Amino acid sequence: MKRAIRKSGDLTALGAMSGTSLDGVDAAVVLTDGHWITDFGPTQYRRYTDAEQTVLRAALGQWSGPDVDAAAAVVDQAHLTLLASFEGIDLVGFHGQTLAHAPRDRGTLQVGNGAVLAYALDRPVVWDFRTADIELGGEGAPLAPFFHFACAKYIGATEPLAFLNLGGVGNLTYVDPSFDRPEQRGALLAFDTGPANAPVNDLMQSRLGQPFDADGETARSGTVQEGALERFLAEPYFSRMPPKSLDRNDFSKMVELVSALSDADAAATLTAFCAAGVAEGMQHCPAPPARVLVTGGGRHNPVLMQMLSVSLDCAVGPVEDVGLDGDMLEAQAFAFLAVRVARGLPTSCPGTTGVRAAVGGGTVSWPDATDIAV
Image (cartoon, rainbow, N blue to C red; front, side, top):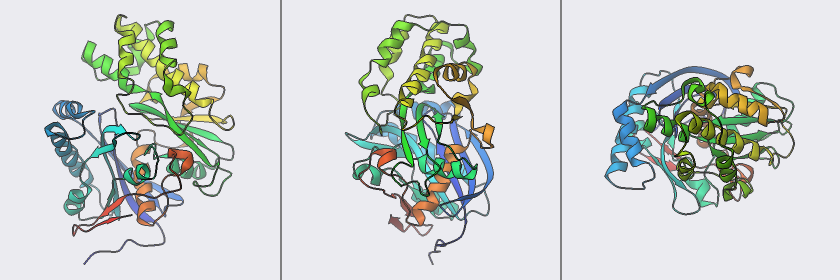
């Protein structure tokens, strides 16, 4: 018999996230009723092997075909291996791996089968978070802002603040914690700021055989090419009003702007692109935030963090400054969102994705293979 999801009280939710940096799978437990965060639980990380990363990279930008099928198999197996080690879980939030994102054209594609995971884990799995938002005119991204709102309440914030996620793509959430609910007009504004780690990672991999610029060492010894930076900021994306979102490869041509530069100068310039995109995006905030809390891999790059500190007119620091886990925040977000979906609560709104009205979208897959679209 199908087990019901409790309609009140806290649930122990397990969230999983595999981001555009393609480094691996994060998994994290959150105790929540879908409104408030009561506590954070265990976390784990499973790195993709070099062979698995090769499979995933081969499928980037594709919508179907053998490469996509191979990537989906990698994602399912990696998640199953990691998530099976957690105990005492009520439900799972499974984001999957984004391979293509074109909300104004073909939609969005996250591979990975939540029904397969539900059967294997013997737990209900919430997945396909983005489709309903796109069908109602939204960008389908970013989806973490409702969780960021809950985080602002959890840390006791009283002034507007911003969460800046620097993964493969950068995205910013402006939060006004004076509101009671995230879907209220003015409570949230969210959008992708531009490329973040992805171009630097690709540069390091192609030129030096390294997965990323560890501690910003390569960028630190280089000089930013101002002409390339000016051309980057002339991209039409920066003149679009938010909400707005990007695919990992939307700025792939910008690598051509640094193709003639040395390794160090190219890394410094691409790092500056990220910081400049954030600075441009901050102009859209309804009011200056008191601080910017940085999450994702970019916060480990001291060169990038210094560029942000110089570029922004407010305090900038990692989310660890307020007791949050910057490595696991996105996985925690999908644990939180899974509970909201299961309880019929919205997960996005006009201020976060541009969707026409607040919407809670997703599919709940049960171990008995019965799927319920919410």
